[in-house]
Length: 421
Image (cartoon, rainbow, N blue to C red; front, side):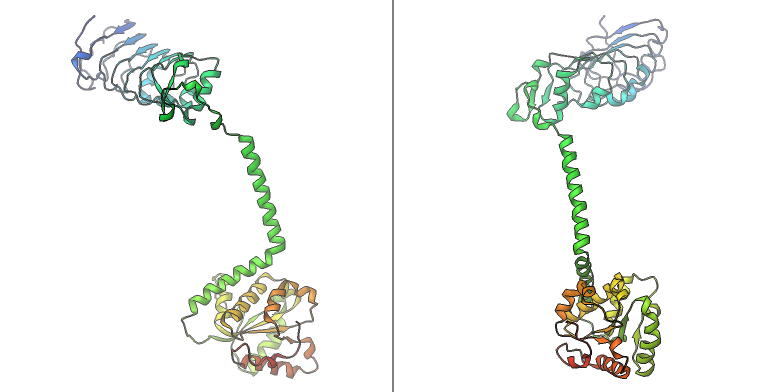
């Protein structure tokens, strides 16, 4: 039958041509190309509720409205070959989920990805020749579980890892027959142009998942071991370096400032030694000698990060008095205060650090501070236990230490009570 049916848009028709042909099972339109590019009205097939086969080859269709097959729920075979359709929307196939055969050799089709959401689970035959796509995605095949015959003849393929799975599937799949697969040729990359797809070596594309998991696991184990080793053997040195770096940044910020110190001394002590600090140290230094001290519980700014409070206190005071005991050495924050204060001593080359020992501590317990002690070289410390017989000498030495100028090379004799080098 020759016809000249042609529509210029997909607007629904007032009087669809097949509205009264509900028993029609086959509808064929051939050779309509000479009328130029065309479209089908969205309700063109209205009334064909029992249509089983629709053939509209070579009609130069540009697209199909998503409602085109709403009126043909029984459709099982659809031929759209030799049209100019570049893509199909998945919704087009929702009303015809029982479709068994589909012909879409259109020359213009750029992708088959619409199958992924088209839900054509009963499709057994697919012909998609002479199209422009060169990669056949794995998701497309998975979306067609009933497929038994696939015709991709005269398509050209990309011969790289994107199609490696497809090559393996063509060779190994036992359900689907891929017609003329031995003659599929490569069009990309250029050095493989014209070669057979099935001759492409896919070994380089195979990912050894077990090996990757093994390497990843080994790297993770080594990383955990390294972190554990570092924390156990170098934890103190790393913490020391971190807080020195924080102090270094603070020192840079204050380098060009010449503000007077807010306090005469910041007192660094452990909470367990607070009784001695409040009963002995503070009354002597603030009450009798008139020094202005900075204390944790009294002068730290609430809500401010602890390390910032520590740094501000140390750099806001002329001196730092470290009240050292066994508990002090075990305290992380006390250790941090001592580290920042020692950095200031080295960085500014000023005599800003005063060490007061509340108890005699064996050298073994001072070993974590070996590097600091070595850098302090000939500096000496005040010892409270050895001042029991002459406490006034202790307080006088401490007063002199707070009075000394900030030249580290001068007035060392003022701290002479105990040498712990």
